[in-house]
Amino acid sequence: MKRLVLSVIVLLIGIPGHTFGQSEPGNPAQARIIKEVRHELLMLPYFGVFDNIGFQVSGDTVTLVGQVTRPTLKSDSENVVKRIEGVSRVDNKIEVLPPSSMDDQLRVSLFRAIYGFPSLEKYSLGVQKPIRIIVKSGHVTLEGVVDNEADKNTAGLRANGVPGIFSVTNNLHVVPS
Image 1 (cartoon, rainbow, N blue to C red):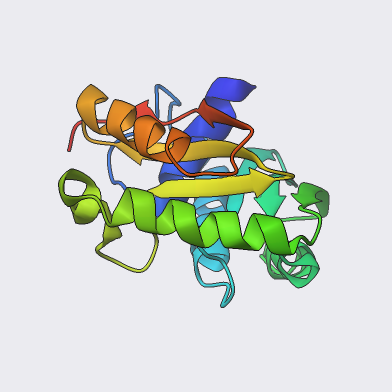
Image 2: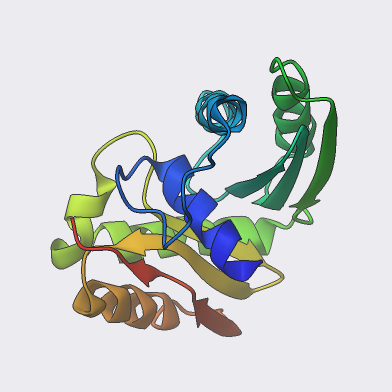
């Protein structure tokens, strides 16, 4: 299950050709659903670097997973996926992170520490950032992909250096470009 969610994260941030070993479905209808779900989620207006949404397609059922900072993003995700032709059921397991001004301050500090560091600035290009910064009650999880092990380690070190962080879990995956 974890491997599948990670492959979906890669799909969401738009890195072509890398799906962590997930094979393309043999069913053309399911392949179309996967493509449309990915597209609809990427087009959500408030989906940002502090949100992490993944999905799994099983037949005509789509399971949404991840963490978001806005409750409307959870419901918007479910609503856009429900409208896709061929989807009869959406299981929305997206967690809405609790509102916290401390966490909001940490998010800004983490964004600057990671995306403002010279060797990681290349990841700041584009609309959807490949390094997702999830903050929950002072605990940080880095999700997404980077080009090499050095960038993964640098992102983790930069996150650990932000004052006020209780813990950092570095779930970044190396996917060479």
